[in-house]
Image (cartoon, rainbow, N blue to C red; front, side):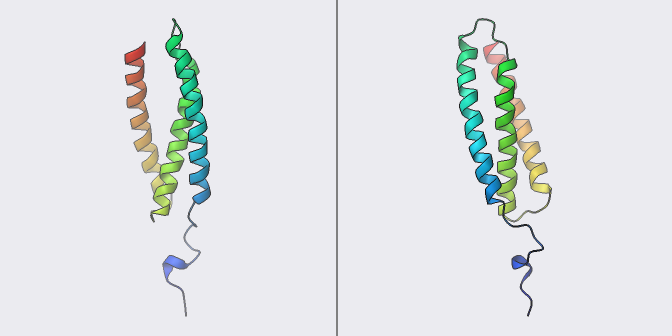
Length: 104
C-alpha cells in the first residue's frame, strides 16, 4: 500500500529551521537598525550609508521568513520565495523612500 502524496518524501520537508533562523536574524538586524536609526536622527548630516546594511538584512530575513512560511502552508518550489521577494522588495522600497523623504 502506498502512502498518500502528502506524506511522501517527494515533497520538501517543512522549513521550520529557516523560519526560526530568519526570525532570529530579522530581530538582530532590527535591533541594529534601531540603534543606527537613533544615531542617524541625531546626526546633522544624515548620511544614509550606515542604514543600508541593517535594512537590507531585515529585508532579506523577511523574504526568507515569508517564503518558508508559504512553504509550510503547502506552496512548494521557488514560487513562495519569488512571491515573498516581490512583496517584500516593493514594501521595503516604499518604506525606504518615505523614510528618506521624511528625514533628509
